[in-house]
Structure formats: structure tokens, C-alpha cells
Amino acid sequence: MTDIRIAIVGFGKISRDQHVGAIAATPGVTLAAIASHTGSLPGLPHFSTIEELLEHGPPVDAVSLCTPPQARRAAAAAALAAGKHVMLEKPPGTGVTELDPLIAMAAEAKRTLFATWHSRYAPAVEPARAWLATARIKSVHINWKEDVRVWHPGQAWIWEPGGLGVFDPGINALSILTHILPKPVFITTAELAFPANCQAPIAANLKLADIDGLPVTAEFDFRQTGPQSWDIAVETDLGNMTLSGGGRRMSIDGKAVAEEPDEEYRALYRRFIRLCATGASDVDLAPLRLVADSFMVGKRVIVEPFVD
Image (cartoon, rainbow, N blue to C red; front, side, top):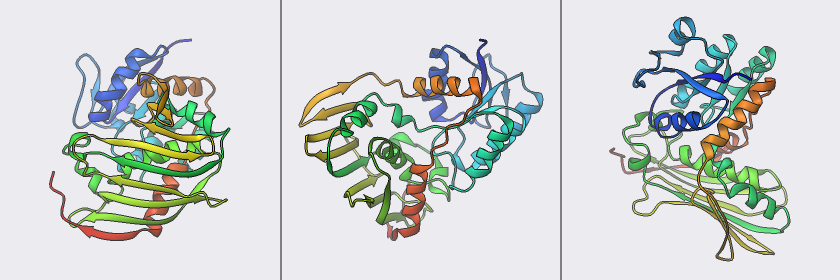
């Protein structure tokens, strides 16, 4: 089988930090081109837009869409119409319903549409899921707090409509939550803190439950300084399980039981290669639905302006 020739569309921080290295380290896929207004790589064909890439670029089999989410729907539609497989960075779009036409396009074209949730591929997530399947879960608490100036420096799009604000990292926690719990959860209440000069929240407190009333709480904050917090604590009848480091470490009653090096993005590309082999799609919208519901039911609180 020949390598999948892939183009990265949108060449910002996440592309440079994660996608380029993951593609280089993954057998079966080759980076063939870049389409971006803001960046390029030496030795690779570069185009300003996906339309220019598709019309004038080298042959590619797939595109990895790493643009801000506001631009992903149109780019994905253009790629699918051109017969390309599509990988979507998270979140897959700015709304839930805009994904439905893309899912239909991919099915009709027999092309892959892969909505990625990289945090699900953190090394301790699957062990946590397996362990929780044997336990009776009593409560869950998410503490997901980071410094936006460190992780999203100068990224104004994140504060615009559709940029999600603190839900850009918070959706990572929700993607793990919806993967490791045995039953679906839904939002019951939410409080969203909006800077006076922004259209997206800088912090959020959520309460969720499953059909049996399992209490789940989540605290998201973009204003954390010092040590960063990406933790999910689960109280069960077999002990207290904690996923920390964004899903990289699992401990039970304080004792580490799983911890491996981070290969999230390599795992994403391995999954993408397998999907492309048959034209199958993988589009789980559960995390995005929870974010959408948070905005629907959330109480809006105005806080001090944010200055990057």
C-alpha cells in the first residue's frame, strides 16, 4: 500500500507543535503540501488557500484541517467535493448541525471524515475506561485550568464567535469524559464568565448528570498561572481514580497504575490511515453537543476585559 499523501490546511501552533512531527513519525502517511495564509515549511509546496491547493497543488489523497474552527466547514466541504479524505482538528466546527451535511457528503463520496479528539488517545484513557467499567461510579469532578497566554498566544480567533474560548481546552476534558463513562451525560446547569471585550467565555462551571443522576461537575478556567491543571477525579466503590496530565497518568487512591509517553497525534494518524483504507468515517459529536448545551442553558456573567 502506498503512503497517503496529505496536506495540512492551516499552519499555526498546533500544526507545528503536533501534526508535522506526528506525520513524519507515522508509517503510511506523507506530508505533501501546506495551505495557509500564515506559514509554510521549506521544501514543501505552499498555497494560500485550500481552493488554490486543490486546483493547482500536487496530487494529495487527504487534508488535515487545522484552521480555526470557524473556517473548517467550508474547507471540509471543498475537500470532500474534490474527492479527498478529511481529518478535522478539534473542535470539528463551530456548531453541531454544520457537521451533518459533511457526514452525508463523506458517505456519498465514500471518503473518510474523521473528527479527532486527541485527548482520548492519551495513554491512560483506555486503562481508565476499562477500570471504570468494573466499578460503581459515585461522582466525577473535572478540574481543567490553564494559562491562555501560554497555550494560545495571540490567537484572537479563540475569543470570537465560534472560537469557544475556554471550551477549546475544556472540550478535551469532555471528550475524555464521554469516552470513559459507561452512560451518556448531559448538562444540567452552567455558569459562563465572559470578558467584557470578548464573545467567548474565559471560564466556566458546569454541572452534568447521566440518566441515573450521577453527579458530574467541571471547572474550566483560562486564567490559571503557575502549575497547569488537567485532571479528572472519579469516586467509585473500588476507590478513587484520578486521570491527570490531560489523560497521561492514571492513579487509584494516589498510587500510579498507568503512565506512558504522549503519542496522541501519532495515534490519530494511525487511526486516520485505517479509516481511509475503507473510506469509513468517525465523527463523534458528543463533546461538541455538551459545549453547545452549555451555551444554551448557561448563565452569562461578565468579568474584567481580557488583554493578551
